[in-house]
Length: 168
Image 1 (tube, rainbow, N blue to C red):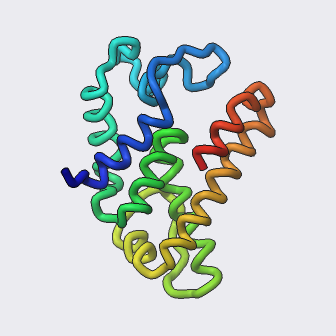
Image 2: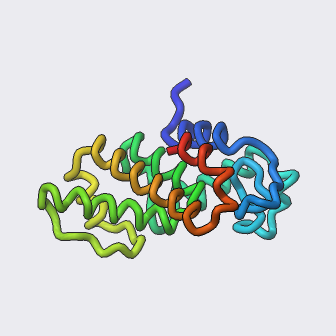
């Protein structure tokens, strides 16, 4: 059976996120499969099914009105999806634009993108003009810095850092 890019991304992310957790020290609060009560206050997190989580992820993370991950290569889509699940899709969209701007400074191929989190034709064109492996490396570097900044500003989150680094 051939899996779609979304199915692969979902399998990877749920494997990282795991099942039900309600850690008082985790800023995400009560979560299951990575879906948090904080972000979904009307969802019964403890009783959330894997099918319901998959539907949320598809509609709210994979195929949104601001970014359709089906329009990107498998590796980029999976990276953006998994990072977005962990830090939020608005933040990951801006991270993508920052990464593209950083790569653009090396080989000026397109005007710098406005870092607004709106993934339109300019961002999509920029993705097509950069080296995919380099883009993935820059995205991972920015993701690492995201986690580092959390720990720098809130030492209580250090206990999660090793897991975040594995995710990166």
